[in-house]
Length: 107
Length: 133
Image 1 (cartoon, one colour):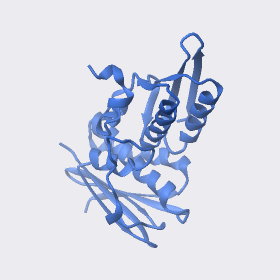
Image 2 (cartoon, chains in turn cyan, orange):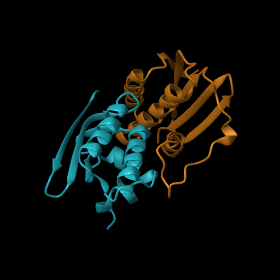
Image 3 (cartoon, chains in turn red, brown):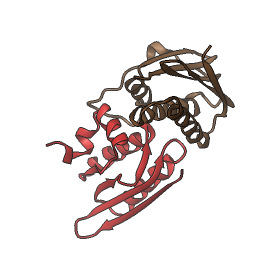
């Protein structure tokens, strides 16, 4: 399965919404990494990565998100992940990344 | 003798998804539930990704063996790449996340048994077992 990524920038809130659709693995991760980097170059701002349409992701995708999180945070902005499916939430939990990437789960 | 399925796979990123799908179909056939199938899918993908990314470009083909046991599925991913010193593997520090190094950690978390044999210059074999409950 391929990966398609929708992105939009909200000028008022200086916030990107990134919606990957499909699968992020070793074959598609470079596209995702490139898109996050290009977006951040284009407009500096916060990032919401909405995973509602992502059916598969493994450590390759998690790695890119962690990398982007670090670079974005360094510049004073935030990155968070929303709506992961159960399979992806499980990976976020076992790697403890839910604590930094999914603030809405930190009740 | 358990039934064994063998796949010979070109060491290229685009085939990792094919193996992931093939092994998850097999796991479904064997009777694993959806959660276990997802675990197997990710673990197999991680092992194949390691081959494709870390075997030093030496792997033209790698092998994936799936043994269907009475109470288990055993998947072995075997390459003839550059290998590495398993004793040097460091578990990632989850409090200071980094971009790489999560693959083996995830495999170990998702599968019931995992063993890794690797020799520098000869290649690597990761064997993973998931039990049907």
